[in-house]
Image 1 (cartoon, rainbow, N blue to C red):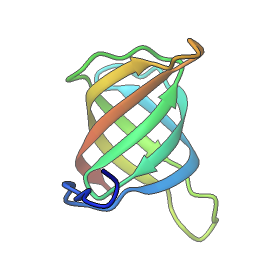
Image 2: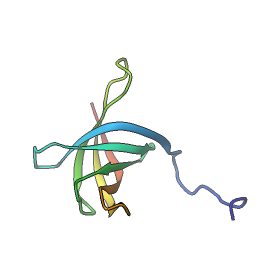
Image 3: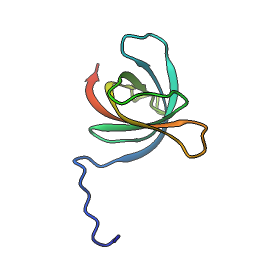
Image 4: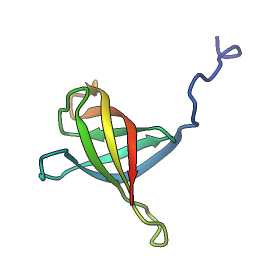
Length: 100
């Protein structure tokens, strides 16, 4: 029921459509994606890379405003599912650490 829905997340999710680059920790090959949403503890990315749960990523989320620096973070993949279209994957991750 829509009227009785209670948000169980600790942080509000902000929808976004910003470019993101990432690499699997220990591997310097860079990959591209789009950040679909972001919260204080998590990130949702669309990418053509198939990733496994528990994979550690170093993520750089670009800002569309020159005055705002990119967000650099260590993210652990919670799940990665192929999009129904079969064209890309949707990757949900937990932000483990914000880097400076």
